[in-house]
Amino acid sequence: MPSSSSIWNPELIARYDLSGPRYTSYPTAPQFSDRFGEDELHAAIERSNSQARPLSLYFHIPFCDTVCYYCACNKIITANKSRARPYLDRLIKEIEMQAANFDDDRPVVQLHWGGGTPTYISDDEKRELMAATRKHFKLLDDDSGEYSIEIHPGQMSVDTIPVLREIGFNRISMGIQDFNADVQKAVNRFNSVAEVSELMDAIHREGFHSVSMDLIYGLPMQTLNTLKKTLEQTIELNPDRLSLFNYAHMPHLFKVQKQIDESQLPAPEIKLQMLEYAIARLTDAGYVYIGMDHFAKPDDELTIAQQQGKLQRNFQGYATHGGCDMIAMGVSSISAIDNVYAQNFKDINDYQAAIDAGKLPVNKGFTLNDDDILRKTVINKLICHFMLDFKEIEASFGINFNDYFAESLERLKPLAEDDLISLDADSITVKDGGRLLIRSICMMFDAYLKPSSEIRYSRII
Image: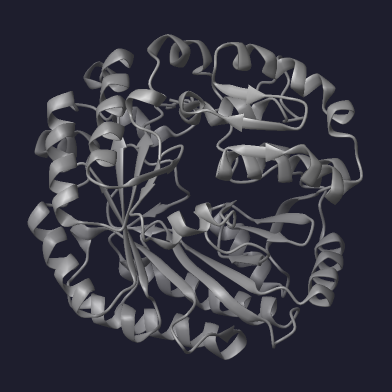
């Protein structure tokens, strides 16, 4: 595990802190096309069934009671809980439609509810949605699957925790973001340490396997001192995993961010101080720096998967299960099946209209060619394991690595000269100083990034 001092070089960070993809997929979502159709999806499903890979299910529940000003998710803000009922009816119909296409003996080893705020729906509706899933898919009944749900700790009753365990969830992800009252007011998201502590007690009583907490640095009204206090409070709560995300202020893309007072945002140099301190404090507290913005305890499955070379990256971030086909259901969700990505309609009315017409609600997609699959593999290995064995890639894809990626390797030479990577004839190893900048390294293998591209990504740090 790298020390915080060995990964921190302000001059190099400034030089390579570019704007770029987060690589939860390759190719990334801007490459998806509305020319992608159901025929391509069904062909991929046939190939998927012939391979009999295990399944991963994702469900998008877009509703929230109130808006968080920093949020870039696909969401619907309403305090009227009855708004969820028509959507749930369609989501349950989509479950039935999707399941009909897949062999019913394929086990679901991963399941995730995201949003929005999945716990927005009532406890009885949660039971109904999971029962429909269990009816149509082969969920594991021995608690061995990785079944997780995102929660907003400031808007959920502690009485819901036993319900989540009852219906099969064994992991919880909490969006903490920050505990400071001024920061919470500035972003309109409120959850106290006491509320989170009470939920944690219930989570431990119910025997959940893992708890993850999300924090954000770079929010309005944040200072280095306020972040330090939030980190101490979070460490005291003792989550198994922790994510520290960079707030990307992009109001031109996400209108809700216009409600943030830009004058209250910390300066770039303060943000760097926050990140440097956070990495040092979390590693001192015993967390392993997995990569990018993720930390985990040494005995966590995420850490173990990385040590065993099994860590993966998908649309939910770092993951422990590889070799799954992901079926994503609900508005805006993205499936990854065999060699295709398929995204549902982003607008809820379009989504529901497709379901009512008896069609899968696919709006965009992408079919990966051989070059895409090769580059996806290279990027996944770098972003998950920080090293790449050329011989392994050559054996899998029948290429000469140095010839095939001659242009990429040439572009990597400055990073090697800056001691961010070790580059030789047979491998790339990302050094401690390059871990923070792994997105920049992966970008060297991205065939779709063009200097003149109008696609606007967040900055790496």
